[in-house]
Length: 461
Image (tube, rainbow, N blue to C red; front, top):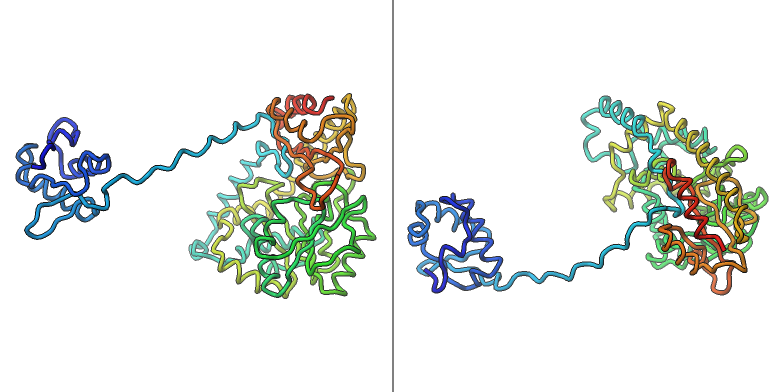
């Protein structure tokens, strides 16, 4: 037996161990360093005698550990602990604890997740699973399940005036993947820069930049993006409800952008992230409907249902379908099949339209309550002058004599409120009007009024 080692080191449970229990005890002793690397272990006969078990029990345990690489056995030599386990793998320092989750969430781009239509989704999932052919459970079409593409083509034409067909729709694993695929396809075709609205979502601008594309900011005013200042071969716009300022692209700018796209073979990427939510009138139809061969339309279920579904879609010009489809095949990251089928059934049954109507009414009430609360503030924070009554957020211009963006964030932490300031959204260097982007859709319905009180405490002078 190894010098200084005894069966007690195995810390076996009471009773005679079987081969599995003995192997586990030996494995733990090796990992803990109680059996150091290179040390001899007892012979099978000696250990069996010490433990009062059959020799075959020890033999099977040793054989298992030799196979796993914990022990080494050579002809004519004693069995030893493998050298490669001379010391336990180093354990990295524990990551810093995540900051505590704020109680009140006013971050933009998030729907009321407590309003997710669970009953309708469950019913749609059951119907879809009941009807799905066994062959559909294979890897499937990377472009997206045909049932969802058919449902989307009908829905987008009816609700957003999108001119497309199922063959031109690609279902993606969220909008981030959609923009990534488009950026890569354009880069492969020689497009070396992409324009974004200024201000815009900074996390989206990093996608083409990571491919080596230049990213340019184009100013936004009360009429939307300044079309005359476009310089790249592609531009990402949010025409229905500009993020984050909340303006709508004027009819004159829409026409100018379409004419520019046709004349210069410019690709317009239309991010229609919350186009269903217009409160003062019928939603303006998509830009894509004016120029289907020059506009790539992008939509998502993240704002209407939940980001966790990872469902977004592209309605592409014909020349981009094959390149984007090929890139999606190579990416290996496809939208989950069962969510696609449930979404298709939800649209076809009419339950999706009903949910959007309910959400639209709820968010309209919230916007009214937010407006009334702002009117009562001592600080003169006001919604962006050209912002429209739409979407899931409102951008406030901060009172010039009130708190700064940094002070607002500090107050928000004190009140356990999470929101975004406008500063990081700007691309151009220099001074910009300070502001706060308030996502009023995120709090649960039952908690909206107390959440609003906390927000008012943050914004109050």
